[in-house]
Length: 527
Image (cartoon, rainbow, N blue to C red; front, side):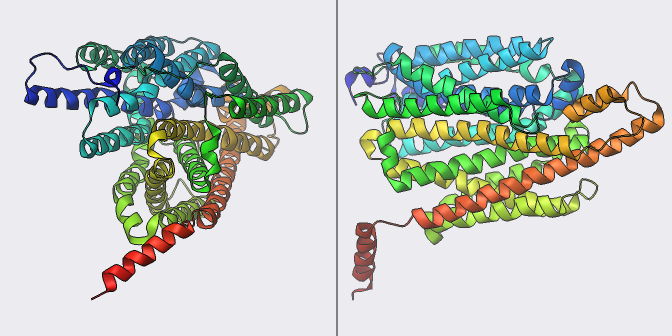
């Protein structure tokens, strides 16, 4: 560690005070990641209430939900590089300021475009926060054992936040309305700004990487084009030239981004790490698993409310077996790895998650919640193990001197997985809902078309209908949404099966590692 990266110690500060200060720094950065995780999913339970106020289309609703994670994913590496240059403390505290202001803007949004813009700003603030926190931990915790504990606590904070989000969102929405799910961030941010300014040391990289604006533009616009095409595809039947152009254009820009990174001496994202099959496979496992997990959190919350008639709080509580099992899976992951090895622990856990998603697709019924508990617990256990071991495999596959770059890719894979999971599975649900909703007698062509846009749009149409027609439309919309959720669970199961097969095939140990293990066994077996 260079002198410029050393933690700022107060002259004359006793060792005990310095030790307390380190853990207070950890509390600040872990709380920041907890907030970022909560914001990833807190809106899930508030969507029906928010939809009644803002009337978003199906595509707009998907943008509201996952523009946050996609913005976060696309800016993490960029903000990390910038933080190395201008100072990590400055980057984190500036990120909190942006996050707090964006939270207030989201809480008082009066239109869908306003809320989408506020969610983009939230993603920007979260990227500024998350990009530098792991570097701060590495600077503050110089002892290897303490640093391992600190990074473990820091990593788990995001998953805990994402899992608690739907329940907190339900509790807050039912009591104060959907805008309050954002407003509660503001006082927490103010406290963190005050405490963080006092205890977080400033540090920067004395030889920071070049901040390549062209790479930033290529990555953001390319990802936006692909995701836009995915979302719009769920709104239309057949081939649309505009959607096709957005998909092809976005894919081309991402291709140019990758090619540029390979040619730069100081790339924004070093793709040479992906030459290691274990690194690339572990990254794909994290993207597939966390994407499926966050998407299921979102669509389960909607399914419980819109098909099952659950209140926001009850929907959040219904997800608690999933949340509790996820925490258990994360904490028992090291035991599973020690017992079966990373390869088979990852493969088995992905298979367990896939089986749970299949069970939800085949037998899921909101009117018989007791039948859902076992699949929810199995999904949570499997996902918890995969997220922990997948992240560990990414870091273990990289050389120690490249741990910072590996950590940036690890964080990006989680957020990118969340954004793409909701985008892809949301498109599948929207397309299924649209094609499954039959023509309802008594609806005009305009009303039928509006009802096919989304479940929330169908609820708007209900207000204009006589009782009998309204009842028929409600039943038809619930059946169509139920069919859409079945499609979501089925697609997630297929993705997880493919990822499990990839893990089983590609996470084989190297020949040198097998030889070392055999040698160790012979030594232990010798008299």
